[in-house]
Image (cartoon, rainbow, N blue to C red; front, side):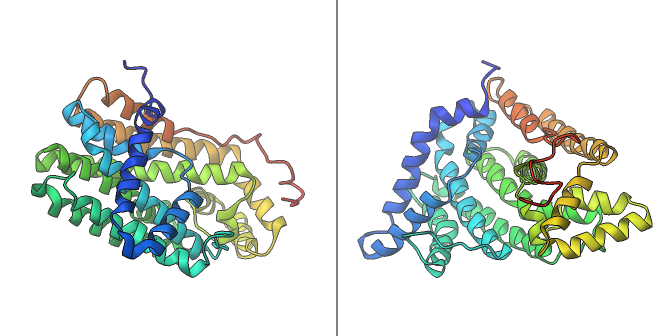
Length: 336
């Protein structure tokens, strides 16, 4: 049983999660048919790459042994991230029109309904005990506020003044808050006492930082380097600038200033970010966040079947994907 992975859990419950989302859409009613169809189109367009909708199932199961009551929360998690990812694209200035279905403005309105109205309707449904609806609504509202604050800090990020600490605080908001929300929601739904809810929320925050670091690496490995194109101050970039001696730091800052309009600058920055010494330090920092997540899980304890799955999920998020010798084709020449 301990060999079960989070992907196994997703395969088991994915159809039921989809049913929860469909049920939420149906609550929009016939008078909101246009909105319902637009939200459905947005959901089709913004498929999540990694099925982390299992997270509330695993937290609830760690508390009770039973993941199924948290299925409505998995739907909330999917809806929240669908909305947030679309808004993130808008913030980054990407073209976000959904070909053949929605204009950019229609998709924006749909994303508001997707991430706010539908989750509230799920919380207020008969699937959720009335006794916890208020607490769950508070978690949703707080998450949006903290995540928005983190996203705005990310948009205002300045590599010239960025440090490891400042980027971690940004990550804790923009990525940690939604994971902290959903883990706390699952703990609340399980009937856990306040001190355990607080621990589960903190676990979600740390996991969110780890997952952002995972995403940052995937962006570099893809060869797209969208973070460099958008001027996003990632943790790895802050490490490079913070550790560099003054002449090298000045060069990194000049490359960052040019990266938005220069493939060559992005390519050179991407190669700098694969420096062996830098990646060794980065690996140590990732290990530190991983160890903190494991410490919280050790304090929490829980169901012997599902707690190991959470530990494995932490280890998955804490993978060191980047290697100094792995350079995407075309990186050196700036042709990608």
